[in-house]
Image 1 (cartoon, rainbow, N blue to C red):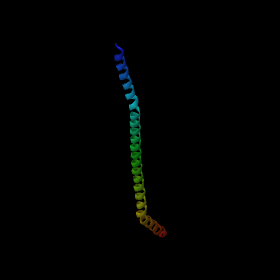
Image 2: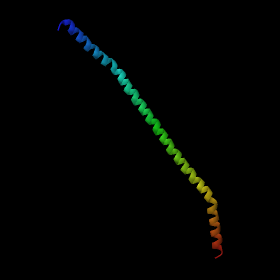
Image 3: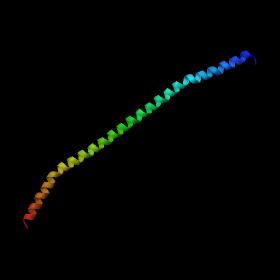
Image 4: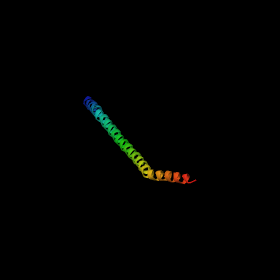
Length: 89
């Protein structure tokens, strides 16, 4: 090999190394962006799930409250009837 060919090989290897070193920050930043996007997506997914659970709890509490309100007259009537039946004895 003549010295000119050696120089061309050295230049090619150097350019490849520079290319790899030059691309490394871009790849790293791409990985950072992907990680941030995935984390943000999981955060929103968890927030939606928590909101759904809170809605279910709210509906259950409302149902229990309405059932208690509707049963008030029934309980009062039952107590009144029990008092009337016990007073006859």
